[in-house]
Image (cartoon, helix red, strand yellow):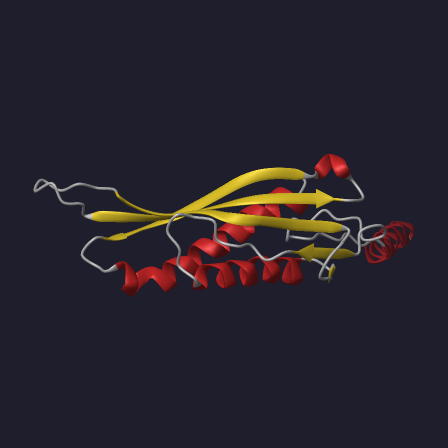
Length: 171
């Protein structure tokens, strides 16, 4: 009887302790102190590259804003946010990659480079001024105009993730 009571008591205490403890994990990687940091402003990124594809600017701006909206609780403001992201698209390059035996490229690479100035007004030590780049290769038998929009979607998503991780995911 005493053994049964001891087992019951130990089990009951364990269950109460487990129910009373909660552990919260965020898998988005953002490490923001929402007590002090409440807003973010993201300026439009103009294209300053030698080669210009006009839809790129809008696609990039939307991808960048979207990742902060989806993965943080920050309010988006037009200017003077607690966190400020600004910059420019500095590169939009097409280069041949794999060369076949007949001296023609079998793969072509589209590379996009973006210069980002990130200012954390609450914690200036986390501010950065960096250039990020991402690329995708495509078969040279395809025209750039046929794959360009798809590649830009993929590249801008990757760039947005790189910038997000470099700015608010302080590992």
